[in-house]
Every structure is written in structure tokens, then in C-alpha cells.
Image (tube, rainbow, N blue to C red; front, side, top):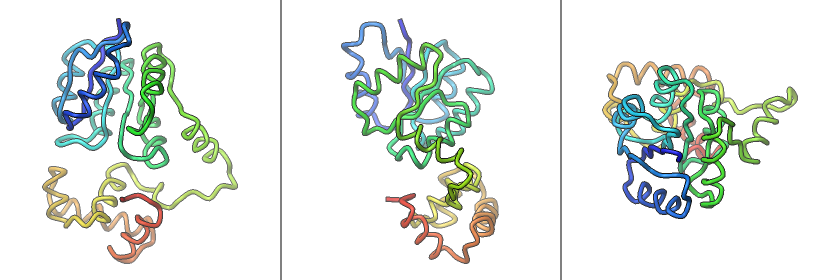
Length: 210
């Protein structure tokens, strides 16, 4: 029996995932978490076969939780299930140690297939992600400049482009305003962009924000 921890801040998503697995006799959701801190505590404090983890959650975000899980329990498979398109986060989470990445728009059968694969110790890579990986191996392929950013810088970029102020970003991430300002400066330097307006334009053009 595959024991699964589901971590998502939306109860309707957690319930939906449990319903998807109702007719799968060899899989059972044994616990759930509504934020990043709770997810990390439960993942490290109990034994699960798979953790299904959202990226955007209160407290620690999914990438932070993923890294801490892999640091303490490197063999525990973590499947990222997110609203963000695969081309935005898939490579980042796979590099960080995730066993797979799925969009929440994926069909239920695809979720079950992914869970079976990662529970058996193999990576789950969709055709879209495989194409993305292939592109990164093509030295002639020009990569978007936002891929130069660290995970935290990329997160701050998206938040700035979504219209959040420096103070709002600091409060949401639990860091001080000066730190957010430092991230902003690094982002502008790495991307060779002058101001927030250009940053927002870039993010919208590259579909980094909705």
C-alpha cells in the first residue's frame, strides 16, 4: 500500500486528490497539510511513500520544503503538483530533487501514473518536460534570461510583476524589506532590466504571471 501525504493550501484541491485515488486500491492518502511548515513537519515526522506538494503555499514555499525534505530524507519521493505551467517550474524542481512535476490541469489518469512511477523509485517526466529538457541540451537554443535567476529571485520577480509592493513581498515571504530590495537589485542586474515596469512587461510577455 502506497502511503501519500498531500500538501496544498486549498482544501478543495486536497479533497479532489483524495477522490481521484478512491478507486485506486493500492494508494491511500494517510495525511494532509495546509501550508509549507506543516508539510515539512509531517514529512519529516512520519513515514510516507510519496509526498504530493504544491509550490505556492503559506509559510515555506514548495521549493523550500522540497529542499529540506531531500536534505533529511533524500530517498522520499516528492511529486510537485502545481497550478503553474510545466515550462515555468518543472526543470527547477527536478534539479532540486523532485521525483516529478505535474500541472493541476493534468488528467486524473496522468496523476495516478505519476504517483505509481515515483513510488517505484523512478522519475516522472511528461512529454512537455522532456521537450524542455531536450531544449536545454541544445547548445544552439537561446534560453530565456529569467533562467539565470535563483529560485528565490524568480519567486520575487513573479511577485513584483504581479503588482505586490516590496513591503507586501517581505511580509508574505517572512523576510525583511532590505532583503527583498537586494533581491530586486540582483534581478534587474542579471536580466539587464532598468525598472519594475520593464520587469512586469517581460514577465507578461513570457507568461510568468497571469
